Structures are given as structure tokens and as C-alpha cells.
Length: 182
Image (tube, rainbow, N blue to C red; front, side, top):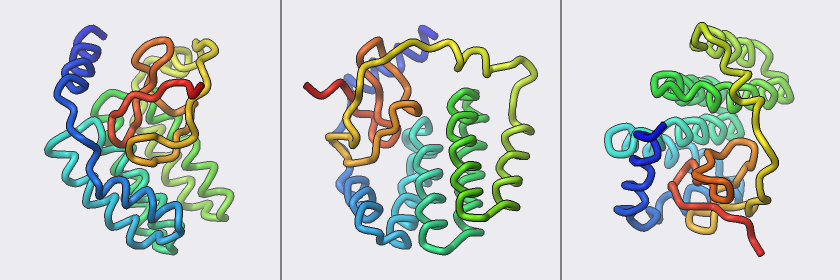
């Protein structure tokens, strides 16, 4: 726990500006240009694997989401699998379960039942032996966050962010702090 907090503080201290390409990718998603967004998020994810590994899973998942929305289901599922597997490799199991559940639900809404089953199987295969659902169930009321990251423009899903403290969350894509809008 201490090590993770120290890493976050260090990242915040040396944080660079948000890459303009990330802002562009989020804008492409917003405008429905899913093919370009998928390619851009995938490139960002590959780069993040080397430079900022904790960002890579979310970027792969967004690349997968964009590819599926653009009609490239097989490529999209490949990206989704990569992102969820990276969460497991990083031992971020509650995050993997939370996003994995949302992914399964979205795939089922699109009548992609075999793909949803594939993701469910991946989730089950990557869970640790001890039950992490108890950890994620024990949460308390958090402040309301903005709907989009003010730095990179990514959509913020309050139930899927990682909290830095009681009032500050972290953008999964650029690492910027997110606080309640007043």
C-alpha cells in the first residue's frame, strides 16, 4: 500500500502534460470516429506498456471498445483481453473485475454473447484464490466527480476510478487528479 502511494506521489511530482494525442483520441471517440480512435488508443497502449505500465490496461480496453464500436469485433476483443490480462498481471484484481463486468454487460447488450463468455472465462481464469469481491464491496460514499477528465477529455466513470485519497481520484488514461466540481 505504502509503495503504491509513494509511486503515485512520485508520478504526480514528475507528471508531464497530457499528450495531445490522448486528447485527440478521446475526441475521436466522442465524434464517433471509432476506427481512428481504436488505432490511436492501441498505439498509446503499446507505448504505455514500456513507459507507464499502469496506464496501459485502460488504454487497451478503450482501444477494444472503440474497435468494437467501429465494427472490428475480433480486434476489439483482442485488445480487451490484453487490457484485462495486464490488470491481472499488475495484481489489480478489483479493477479487473469491475471493468470486466462492465465489458461483459456491454458485449451482451450488443448480442456478442460468445465474446462476452470469452471475457467471463478470462476473468475467472485470472482471479486469485482469495475472494477480492469482499474488498471491492467495502466502500463508502465518495464525492461526485466530473463527467470528463479536464486534462485529457476521457469519460470518467466514478465507480471505475482509482482513488488517491478521500476526495481525489485519478484519471485512468492520463493520471490527472480528479476532484468534485464546485
